[in-house]
Image 1 (cartoon, rainbow, N blue to C red):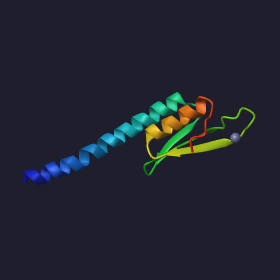
Image 2 (cartoon, rainbow, N blue to C red; image 1 turned 90 degrees about the horizontal axis):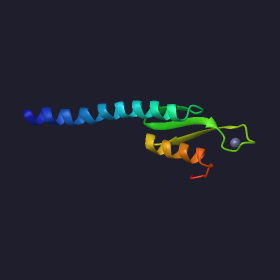
Image 3 (tube, rainbow, N blue to C red; image 1 turned 90 degrees about the vertical axis):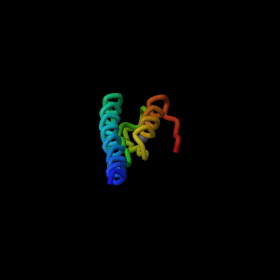
Image 4 (cartoon, protein in one colour; image 1 turned 45 degrees about the vertical axis):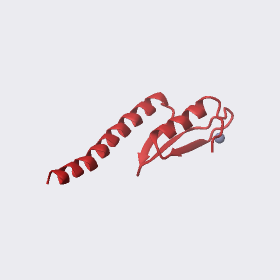
Length: 85
Ligand SMILES: [Zn+2]
């Protein structure tokens, strides 16, 4: 019986922690990049914001499977817009 309880706890705890981490990461990313709209859907992270080309008025949507990946993409946009895809 103890084994079953441990198994359930192991399944539920990391999921809850990931959820909190994602909410915190989303809030901190949004604060760091106010020009971008950042959201997470079905585990994929998206950010829609201004094109890095000054003369270009289009809006781009970046996506990454993790919040950290999206942070890297946003950092690349800010630091000169090197294309990484
Ligand atoms: Zn553009």
